[in-house]
Length: 396
Image (cartoon, rainbow, N blue to C red; front, side, top):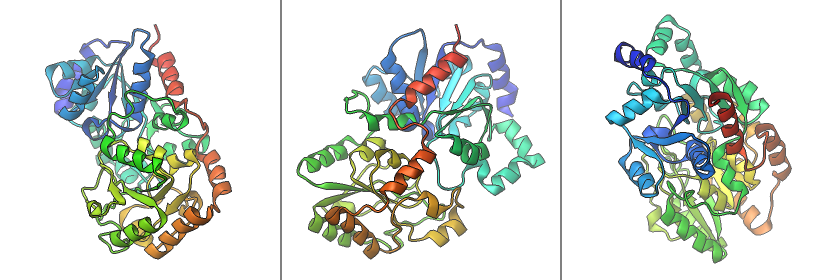
C-alpha cells in the first residue's frame, strides 16, 4: 500500500520530462538482451535531445558502464527515485521491473515491454493458474495494488503469427509492434561495435575465437532451467567424459551456457575441450560464433533460426517437463526444427552426421518456421523500435 499512498501521488505531482527514457534490464538491471542492444543503438545515434539512462541495481554493471562513459543510474538513491518520477518512457525486458515500488513511481510513464524471448513454454497470462488468479477478485485486487500484470503501452513481437498466437495471450498491451528483437541485430553485421562485448564473457569468447582460427567447430549447449530442479548431467542423461572423448575425436569444442536462473555448475573445467560460459552474461555474441546449437525447451532456438544453422534438441525429460515444470505454448514437434535426441548416444550420432557427413535434413523446414516466427530477417530491429517510440511518445 506504500506505493499507492506515497509513490503514486508523487508520480502524479512531479512533472514528466518528455525526452527522458530509462532502460531496465532483467534481474535488477543486468546488461544483456534486448534492452542492452536497443540502449546501445540509441547511444550510437548520438543525436536529438533525448536523455536516456541504463537503470541498474548492480554495482558491477554501474561501474562497467560508467567506466565506458555510458549514461547509467544506480538504484536506489535519491537521484534514481527522482529520475523514476520524471521518466516519460520506461523500456524493460522482463516482468520484475515492478518491484520495490518502481511500478508506482513509474505510474504515469509510457511502458514498453521488449521481453526476453519467444518462449516455447507458457509464460505469464498464458499459464492457466496465473490467468485464473488474475481474473479472480483477489487477483484483480493484487494486480491493482502491485501491478503484477500491468497494461503496457507497447509490446514487441516478432511476427503477425506470434502476435496472434503467443504474445496476445501472455500480456496486456495497447499496441504491438512486429519489429523483431534488438539483440539479434548483431547477427547481420561484421562491423565491430566497441560496446557490444560489454556484459559478455570476454575471456571465454577469446578462447573460442582462438579455437575457431585453429579449425575447431563450436558446439553450444544451452538448456533451459527446470522449475523442479535438475539438469542433464545431474539426471544422468549426459556424461562429460564421453562428450570430451567425442570432442577429441572430431575436433570440436563444447561450450556449456546454463540458463541464468540456475546456479548449477558443470564439471567442465576438468576437460580442455569443454568450456563453461558465464551464465549471467550476454549469450548473443556466443550464438554468433557457434556452429551448432544443442538445446531442449529454451527460446534460444528461435533466435538461432536467424543464423540458419543446425539445432539439435535434447529433450531427455520431455514427459516430466510438461507434467511437472511447464506446458508448451507451441506444438513441440512442429516448432522444434531439428533432430530429437533422448540419449547421449543419439545426440553424438546426430552431431557426427553433421560434422563428418554434412547431413542437415532440416534446412528447408528451418526456413519455413523462420518465415512464420520472424517477419524481418535483417539487422534493423532496433531502428524500427526506436523510430516507433520516437514518433509515438516523444513528439516535440
